[in-house]
Amino acid sequence: MSIPEPYHAEHAAWMGLALDEARRALDTEDVPIGAVVLGPDGGVLGAGRNEREAHGDPTAHAEIVAIREAAAALQRHALELGEGGDGWRLEDCTLVVTLEPCAMCAGAIVLARIPRVVFGAWDEKAGAAGSVFDILRERRLNHWVEVYPGVREAECAALLRDFFAAHRT
Image (cartoon, rainbow, N blue to C red):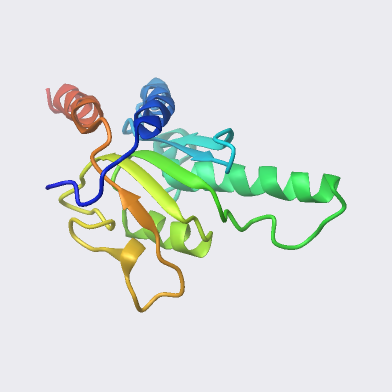
């Protein structure tokens, strides 16, 4: 796949955080996918890694875990300020993930109103950010996402390739 939009130097640094999360998934025999949600200031609001095996939860994808953590952090912050309501909306945030989001995660990204997604490796079997589907930029939905693909792609893909090769033997 070609990279349709250029990515920024900071995206590569952010991907390092997601890769750290992905490597932590190996401790529980989960597929090594990691994600972080960054606030408008670039600070980490939420981090996650695949936890499907760890928790026996088919929805525990890295993106979902990170989105839940970020939404909870924003909600706590809103309550501390005496504000209520829409702390769960991740407007002005960026999600960085090591693998192209699947349909479930892409739907969650749209519903959370995340405006930007940075991802590493393409998922040509189940990706929903441009390879198989393009849910993140589907014009019939109420929210569209800027997508920056291919950030540290080789490194992200190698982590997955090595994991699956080890599990086939």
